[in-house]
Amino acid sequence: MIDFVTICDYLGTFAFAISGIRLASAKQFDWFGAYVVGFVTAVGGGTIRDLMLNSTPFWMEQASYLFVSGLALIFVIIFRKYVIKLNNTIFIFDAVGLGLFVVVGVEKTLTFGFPMWVAICMGTITGSAGGMMRDIFINEEPLVFRKDIYALACVFGGVIYWLCLKFGLPATGTQFLCATGVILMRIIAVKYHISVPVLKGEE
Image 1 (tube, rainbow, N blue to C red):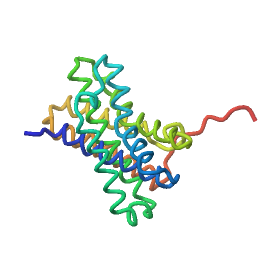
Image 2: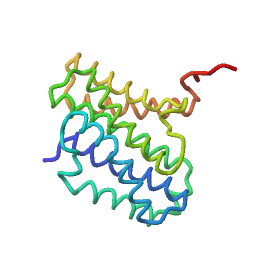
Image 3: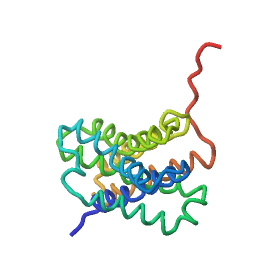
């Protein structure tokens, strides 16, 4: 039986791959180039996490992540009229992928026996690093470095996870609240233009 974390992992991979492919299409990449951007977006954060945890990157042990990214490409090709033209599509898929991957990152780090503060850091890296690599690939300023609340949403989700553990909530409920917290924070921050103050240099 597939557990909730595995479902999050695959759904997050699919969502992040779509967000990367969507942006690649706006840059007129070919199908293979778009697939590469989508795949890197989907596995980039988890790869960095696994290397820091001294573990073999997850996608190197299971080819299913390559196939899920391929399905994301097929999805965008088939529904391109809707996916590519909708301005909010990239944001929605990115927010969903962000929330789901924070759960995966936190869970895996705790499984390796690291303390909660490390798990929050790894959850943040799992969620945000892939998007940073995506933006670099398509020659855009990484979203994580802008004033938008992005990586901080991951941290927020990690704190929710920690609080749920403190109150003894069931694992599935904890994971669901963590992912939901990240997604909602992203949506609220964008909708109401909530951002982190910009660090200004000398004028």
